Image (cartoon, rainbow, N blue to C red):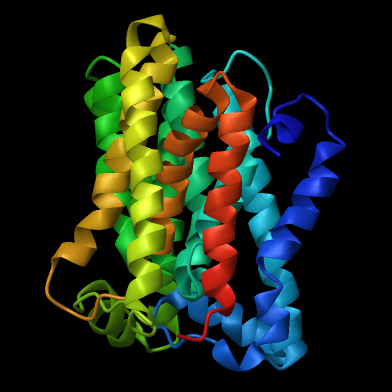
Length: 330
């Protein structure tokens, strides 16, 4: 399968869409397991309010939206990886890896604030590539700050990626205080505009105390199966570790932009992992946001394995474990 997607052929996207459907069939087979999440995030609340009005939050309609959103996000990530020049040729492997990662656990499936936020996290990461190429990038810096703020209003832990904005400026460019100020203003502007709306509707305390200043709550159920958690997380961790080793071995051969981008991906991983270290109700729903940086790293492994048969075996094993525990009742 890796060889099939490791080509520069747009028609492969049709098979990618089928791949997304296969890994999300459980949404349609076992609808009782999935429910619309309760959230205090303003934009997530607005999204589910609109789906309530339009579709009465019908489970099957929301499942279709999930599949389409995941497919679009996979193509966005694939385009991002191509722009980063991580690979010598155009490939759709990053899309396959991303879809697999997002479907690792049943708790990752179905629409959640974290999944919605990734629609904005991916283009926010893409803005960092233009920091490296352009002499002046005030617009891109502002856009990244703005997109990070939007992602945070869908899912609060995404606010931490504003730190990534400043790390990206430090890694990609020489210091310019104007760029740092513009990036922060982009981040603050969307929060200010949202707060203005709440002020005009006499609900500003709800926004400030109920979301911005409140302790982070990670919604969702707890780990449903220790066995699935151990096997799937262990398998994925091994893939990520192997990818890091291969990248380090090829570090000096890689383009400068590719090196810096992978470094930023790891910073994104660390920042998004940070909320899980604090005391509170840690759930698998939160860890879906790690799929973006994780997919960037793991796709590097699959593309750079010289023997295609080995890459296919590793991928088939990964998918088999994922699908087994999607339907496993133990």
